[in-house]
Image (cartoon, rainbow, N blue to C red; front, side, top):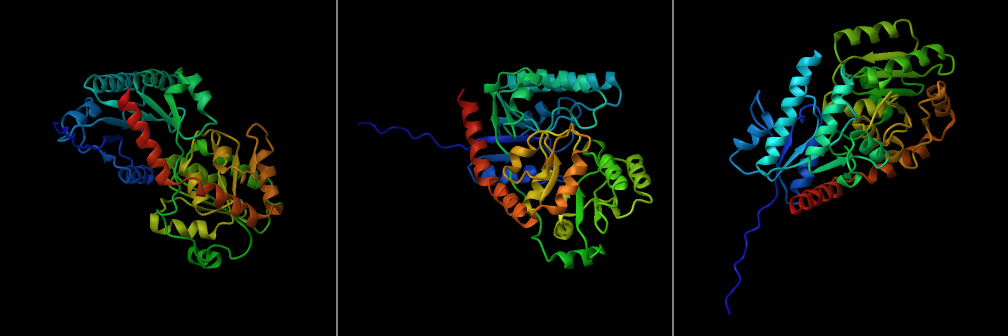
Length: 367
């Protein structure tokens, strides 16, 4: 009786693009969780102007089984419509020829269209075609699955929901609240309402400042702390102008390094994320990683992600919604709410996310 020949095991080889690890730990955490589940993850190296995805695959010393595509903005850039259209077409051709050489394509949809898009119809056109070209689509929550499938015009069975994991092991742990406030030279009394992250128009910061200025008497003795690097110098100046003369507002217009992130969240009482539009949010998950009560609109997957810790969420269509949430935060049991946030965050386990994503790759390759 002849012995069967053993087939050597080869792990799935995945190329992730673009590489945003410097600005966002999400891809690093995802790659680590995948590698713990036997998947080899690579990122592109060097700069290629023409068909960067196809050329990254072809010039690699190892073969790739899967291209895992994330954000599209580096490939569909352009301040003028015609330039952006040309880049968008080139990008779609890039994906098409990458598939032609046998690489499967998985796309994680992080936002409906690019934030602050100048040409939303063109962005949507590109995404609809891309949704037909890729093998599988990942969304971070069930709440937006049906709407995105309808808007992008793909069969809903093509998509899988896999959440964003927590950031508990990325930044330093919390320290004593008063110690953190003292280190940051912040008021030692009163509540601190923190908005942290890159300062961009879609995040609703201007509306937050307007509400705070008009109702300063309600939040007497409290502080609104806005921290993050502005989108550009012009937007930074606009926010500075809006905060002039507004009592209780402190702005740190700077990028927060990882080793200082814990100070701001330790000092904060509540995190405020008044998005005007959102699909998924790393800022939300960072706040959850510090078990902070969160004020935010019921948009995208925010309510689904927070689960039972949603008592400070508000209707985005209600003009008084943000104000009412701020008022409610004065009386709600913040300690109990913090416990609920922690429980919701416990579910966002990277080991489970890595396992689910690796299974998705396997299913994609077996089709």
